[in-house]
Image (cartoon, rainbow, N blue to C red; front, side, top):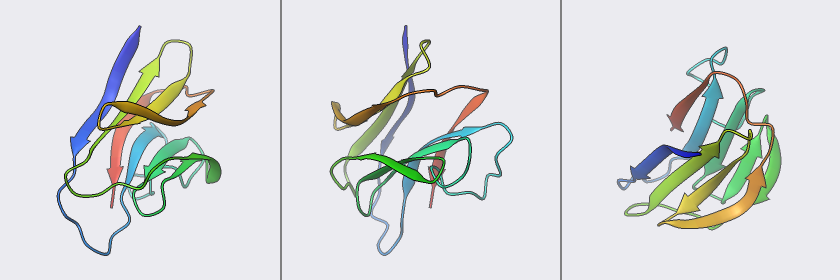
Length: 104
C-alpha cells in the first residue's frame, strides 16, 4: 500500500532553502528536514536528498510552480516525486511515527 505523505505546489520563495520530507515524532520542528537523526528531506537549492544529515541521493532542483511529493509504503521505503515523476533513489528504513515536514 502506498500513501502520499506530501504533495505541495511551491510559491516563489527567493534566497531560501526549502526541504520537504519527514520527521520522526522526537524531532524538533525547528530542524531542517533531512538534517537530523530521524529526518528525511529533499532540498530545493541543490536537489540533495538527505537522511539523518547524510546525502543519500540527488534529483533535480525545484522551485516555484513545481509539485513535490513523497510516497511511503508499509515496507519502510519511500521516494520523492517531482511533477508526478519519481526522482532520486529509494529511501530505506523509513520508520517510526512520521510527520510530513516543509522546512524553510
